[in-house]
Image (cartoon, rainbow, N blue to C red; front, side, top):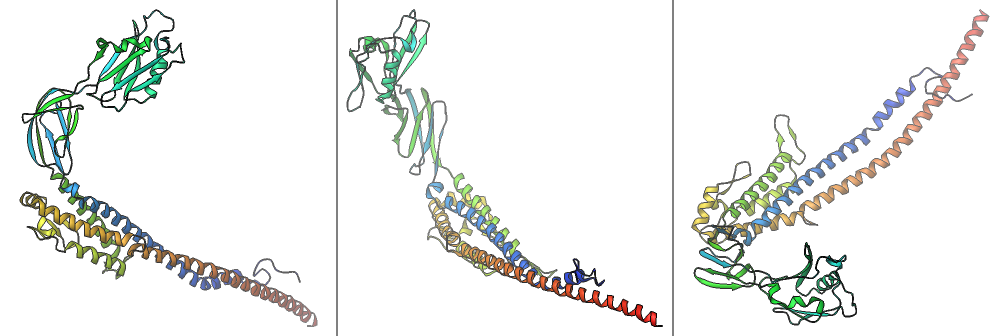
Amino acid sequence: MASISSLGVGSGLNAEALVTQLMSVEKQSLTSLQTKQSGVQTKISAFGSISSLVDALKGKLSTMKSINTLAATKATSSDTDVLTATTSSSAKAGAYDVNVTQLARAQKTQVLISDGNSATSGSNEVVGGGKLKFSVEGASAPVEIDLSSNSTASLGDWRDAINGANGGVTASIINTSSGAALTITANDTGKAVTFDTSNATGLAALSDPANTSVSKKAQYTIDGISFETPSNTNSDAISGVTLNLAAIGTTSLTVARDTSNIQAAVKDFVSAYNDLNTKIKSLTAYDVANKKGNTLTGDSTVRNLQNQITSALGAEYGSGTYDHLAQLGISTQKDGGLALDSAKLDSAISKDMSSVTSILTSSATALYNKTNDVTKTGGMLSSKTESLNSMVKELTKRQDTMQLRLTTIEKRYRNMFSSLDTTISGLSGTSSYLTQMLAKLS
C-alpha cells in the first residue's frame, strides 16, 4: 500500500495535532534551559552596567587622589593684555607688581635683491652661487650654506638651502612692487644673528647692519627687581609660575590656591558614587508587594562590592584636624548614597588645607585600589562575568544536544502515527468490504 503523505489523511485522526501536543510536552525541558540562559544573560548585562559605573568612579577617584589637582593654584593678572601666567603645583600664594618695559623680539634681516624689472624676479631671481655662513648667538658653531657648484642659484635656491639647514633661522621671500625681498628671521627671540657673505657676493647685503632689526631681550621688574630674559616666557622669576609677557605696561599678579579644583573633584566623586549606588539598589531591590526580586537580588558578589566600598568610605584617614570624610561634609545617606555639604568643605579648606588634602588623597587612593581590585582581570566583577559567560556556553551546548534529541523524538512520533494511520486506513477498507458482503447475504 502506498504511504500516506499527511498524518491522519487515511484514518481521519488529527494526528498532526497529537504530535504537536506531544512535542510541546517534550520541549518543556528545552524551554526551561532557554529561560535559564536568558536569566544568566540578563545578569551579565547587569554586571556589565555595574562594571561601567565602577570604571567611571575610578576615573573620578584618580583625579581626587592626585595632590597636583587638589593643591593647584591659580595666577590672576589685573591686566591680561600686559601679562598672563600659569602655575604648577609648586607655586605658593603671593602678590606681585610687574612692570614690563621691553618685549623680547627676534632679529629679522631683510634685503631687496631684485630691481623688479627682471622677467625672472621673485624666487626665480638669479643671485649666483657661493658660500654663506651665519652664526646664531649661543650656537656651538656657525652654519655654512654651500651653493658654490650652482653658479646660477636663484633666490629660491638660497631660501630652501637655508631652511633645510635647520640652523636656527627661517628664510622667506616677499614679492614687493620694487622686487623680491629675502627675509631671514631668528627662530628664537633675544638672539643675534651675524652673516659672513664674503663668498656669496649675490647676498652681500645681508651683512649690512642697516638691513637688520636688532634682536631684543625682554626687560621687566617684579616688585622692583629687574629681569632680562631672551624670551617673553619665563618660568624662573617666580617659583612655580610661568610668566607670559604680552605688551609693555604694568599689572598686578596674584597667585592663590584654587579651591574650585577640590570642590569639583569631590562633587564629581560624589556624583559617580551615587550613580553606582542607584544602579546597585535598582538591580538588587525586592518587590515586597509582588514578592519578587530583581536581577541581582541577594547576589553575594554585589553585597561584597558594597561592603568593600562602604568600609573604605567610613575609615579613618590621617591624624590632623580632620580624619573622616564626614568632617569635610561628605556624608552617607539612608539610601546608601553620598551627600556633599559644599559650605562645610570650604570651611575645612580654609581652616586646615593640608589636613583636607591628606584625607581626600588618602581616601581616594584607598577607594581607587578597591575599585581597581574588583574590575581588574581576576577581580570580583570580571571573575563573576567570566563565570556567567561560561554558564551561557554550557547552557547553549545542552540546548543543542536537547534539540537533536527532540528532532529524533518527533521523527519517531511521526513514524508511529504514520503506521497507525496506514493500519486504520486498511481496517476501514476491510470493514467497508465486509459490510457490503453481509448486505448481499441478507
